[in-house]
Image (cartoon, rainbow, N blue to C red; front, side):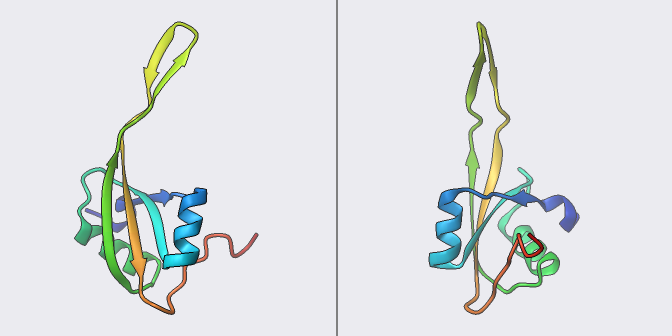
Length: 95
């Protein structure tokens, strides 16, 4: 799998920000078929940071209603990547 298809986007929430500050961990939305080895290689190659550990989890899509119509958000995969001490990834450098 191409490294550009493995990582879809950073997952930025309050909990993800706390993990980044306290444990040097970054959360990403990744391709559902990607495994831990592919995620590690993609992060090290694209973001040029040394990865110590990768944890993955499948997130179920939430049920949503618009009036009487019910729908479902798509399921997705989340990867929590722990970086080596001294490594840093800043998504909002230019802002």
